[in-house]
Amino acid sequence: MRKSCSLCGGELGPTLKEINKPDRFELHIGIKADNYRRFWILCNQCLCAVNVNTVKNQKLLSEISGSYYQIDFAGLPIKNKYRKILSLPDIESDNYFRVKYIVESLKKFTSNCGSINRFGGNINVLDIGAGTGVFLTKLIMEAEVSNLKINATAIEPDPIAYNHLIEIDKYKVINKKFPCNELEGKIFDLITLNKIIEHVKYPHKLLENSLELLSPNKGLLYIEVPDKDTIAYCASEDNVLGALHFHLYSFSGLSRLLENCGFVVLESRKVIEPSGKITIRAICCCKEGGQWLAKTQNMKN
Image 1: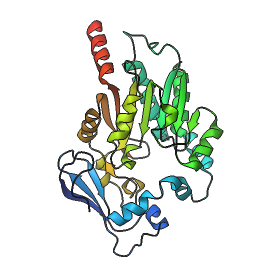
Image 2: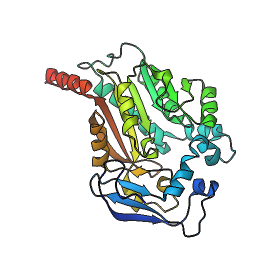
Image 3: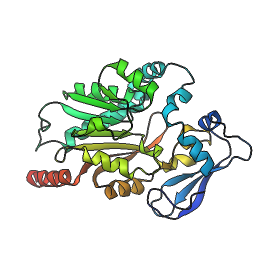
Image 4: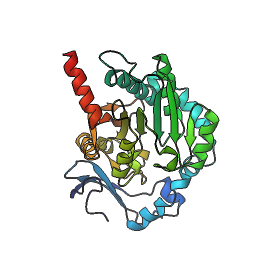
């Protein structure tokens, strides 16, 4: 089992929670309940929680990356979940508050001394790991309320999710893993990683590749991850503690990871979502964007 943190290389410390039953993904691929043990362990350095599983189980889990939704929905139409979540009242919707925060951040951090027209037209958005499409659909809807026009591209490798997303017909959809050739030469004003990097053992390259696609002067990255404090409040069988999550993040650990990958963290916050999930979200830019914002603030003052 792992002895060091795959995020920062730090030494692993105390066990935060021991899991004694395989989750539904592990059961699906034949991992037995007999003598099953998995651990969420604190990294002494970045204070994130690391999911420690056996090498054998990790290898088996890596083989289901292309059939996630086939297992998750067990044959039920993905569009049913899309419609159900999309129709939630605002007060009950995680996505409603998520996209409100993003749109307010677009106004706040891309304003040219008070004007939100620095994009000069459409806001080019890349959503990495679009899933059911609820988040991106809600983002487009909320932007329209604020008179912002979004031109969106969704990346989704899962074939079931991809076929569903193209039926929504609100954005371009690429059925590939990120990064891919279809994005070469493209630049985006906003890149979103909504509950994505906790599924990646070594997220550094993914973040660095995202940075390369970000507009150097006006581009923003929105990132959201589950908070490690979730461990203290969730039952062992809760999805957030499942075997497909490699990490649960700390406030400082996420900031450190982003900065090491070349981002400037403009703002981050911890929230409890309507669903009860404890989440960390952050708005970032590249170094050139940070310098531009610093100059803008000096001009205002």
